[in-house]
Structure formats: C-alpha cells, structure tokens
Image (cartoon, rainbow, N blue to C red; front, side, top):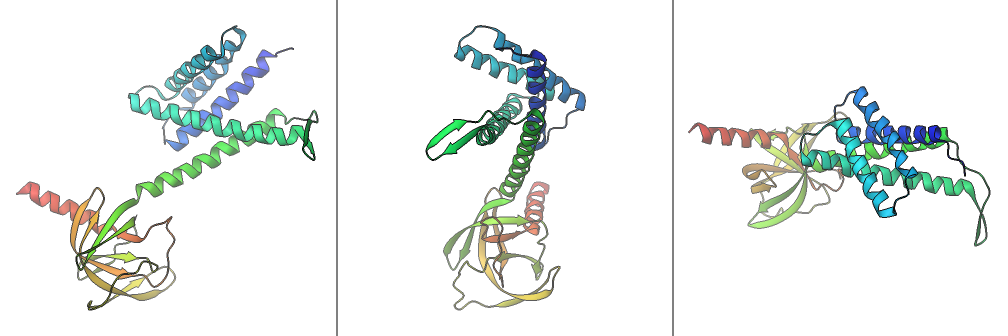
Length: 270
C-alpha cells in the first residue's frame, strides 16, 4: 500500500489547526497566528511516528507526549493546571470531531440491505471532511461557551420564609437592578409556590422592553447565596409569567453583589 507522506502531513496539519483553534475559542486563549501555525505544523510533522515499528501502547504514549508539546508550542506554559486544561479540551475535541467524521464517512461509504452492511467504495474527499470537522468544532465550542456562561451565573440559593427553608437555583441577571424602598428585589418563577398566608403584600412596578407592569412582592426573613453568604432586608417578587433560564428558579439581583462588597469594605475600614 502506497502512503503519500505529503498528503498525510497536510491532513494532520489542517486537522490539528482546527483542534487548536477550538481549544483557543473554548478557553479564550489569546494566541498569535504564528504560534497557532507553528503548533499545527509540529502536529502535522508528528505523524512520522507511524513509520516506526512500535507497539500500540508506545504509539499511544508518544501521541500524548507530542500532543502536549504541540500545546506548549501553541499556548506556552503558564502553570500545570493551565496546560492540563488545554490538553483535556484538545482530547475532547479530538474524540468528538473524530467520532462525527467516522460516523458520516461510514454512512457514505457503506450501504444497507436489510441487516446486511457492505462497502460501496465511496468516501468523502478531504475538503468535505475538513469542512465537517471545522463545523463540528465551532458548533461544540459555541455550545460549551454557552454552558460555561450559564454555570458561572448560577448559584445555589436558599430562601428563609417563616422559619422555613426553600432551596432553589438562582440565576444572576446583570440586568436585574429592581429595588423597592432601596432594597434589592429578587424575582421568583411563577411555578415555584410559596406560602403567602398572613403575608403583607407590596406592589412593585417594573418595566421591560415590551411593556411595563406590576408584580406582587413580599419581604423575606433572609436569603443565602452560594459563595456570597447571607442577606437580609430583601424583597421577593412573584413573577407574573414563567421564565426559562436553563432550570433557574429565581432571578437574583445585581445589587446584592454591590451591597455585599460595601458591607465587607465597611468592616475592613473599621
């Protein structure tokens, strides 16, 4: 069987370029085009290890070592954790892209007749494979960035009402600066039920892009937010509609973060 080394090098170079680009997008690494090309070039040249007669285990170990070297060339070394994060996402992207390309190539290259599967001699050309690989990495990168953004803005939240605890998932909305009597207002999803018996009701006006409105509001004893601590003198608005924020039960208020910092600063000044 003939192996065209220049062709194999080109394939490795281009796919390594796509993978390194994906890692830089997901982890928001600021790298120069020169380093990205040098890393891809090294990755393309590393395919020469296929010319050596070595065991599968040794081949795998060498591939992992060469992958780390490729990452060091591209992103440099800042810390062990930094490099390991780059390595983990490189492996994840490699598996996902390889799996997608294998699946599509199988669908194109094999025919089905009942339970019988046989090859038809067809295969995708390099340009199509590269396009699919690039598209796969970009879609996955965008998806992961969205997931990470949601996780950053989500906090375990506990409401204390009438000496009862209500465990919720809070979402920090930087656009929610709603206040009542200069106190922050949190917005509870409509599908979350709370006991309003014997509770004094307040009516808080609000305005959205679509229209203004009024929400019923109660005062809670205190609230606990993960990694932030306890807050008192907080109002809880009952949403008129259900909102969908990836499983969030309550919209947190940006002013809570500012109030917490003011409390900490005042303590330090004293």
